[in-house]
Length: 431
Image (cartoon, rainbow, N blue to C red; front, top):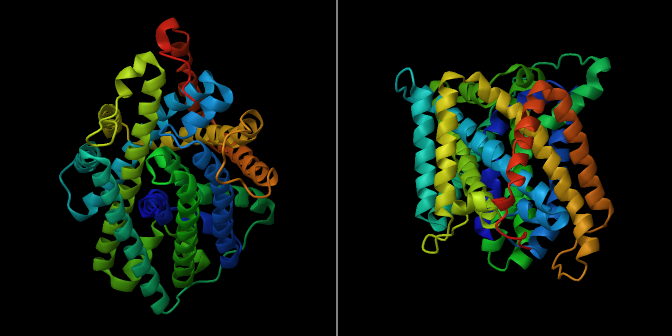
């Protein structure tokens, strides 16, 4: 259970908390309003976690969302979900995280004109290799990185609270854009909270999963919410609303004011640990989706082999690592393309998140006899709230990303021809 909670904290607390506070503050009229948005993000994540707690405790499976979608809707949605994770969402996220590590590591020690790419390649190879050795090594790496992140953020909070506030008065907010601004702020808030649902891919590997998955989700999200509130309060207290909103690197700005140059170096290292932690979690869960896909579809059968000694899908990890390195190679010449990747993954992500929420209703009706160690409280209101949030975020992400979102949809639909292959299905979907 401790491994699972640490996994959630490490997955969620990534580079986002060092970037999005300024974007959220820029859309708010007061510091209190900004903190309320971060609290709302935690509450929304908790609602989603309650839905996932029922699904993961009733259906522990390494396929996670892929398994729930397959049971609820059949082959096509499940395959397209796995396809999107394999081709865009997971591998693209790994590559983007790797480049972010390269950018910050180059601020400490630069390795020449290709410094960011070299660090990115090293990060992908290192973390993939650790997880190929075994799941124990992967989870220990996750706990060490998570511990470093939490310790670093607690240090930032302590230093910020001890310092004298130097905030400036907040700039006026245009009333005509407040509603859309708050909607935009929630996109960034929920993006920063994203990743807690990845624990579903480890549900079959958690001891006493039918009992412990609920605790893992609640403890993990509760810890993340408390950390986010403390960090944002520190930023706002130290720099003020206007200073936080105008900063491109708010955490670095705080540490520069508190400790000078050494503070900037320490913050760069903290960001690297945070990104490594998120990246390690993505590598672990992404390989499990590929493994589940390989178990059900013949063209990807080579991915559906589990290494009993390491207790991990080694070939799925190797394939994922190779695909991520290919994206790093492409990104070396077209770095702007990775910013676009962030945009076009969002609509696909919220689409499948919505479908998973709806699957709870479908499976309750269709498989009512299944033992459910945990049932969502206040059903059906709780999952309806979760589905409503997902629908709003899907709409917002499509409107915000525009053409980038359409590219993501095209990539998603590109997997349909594989379903048309008569021999493409190795066996009926394994419930």
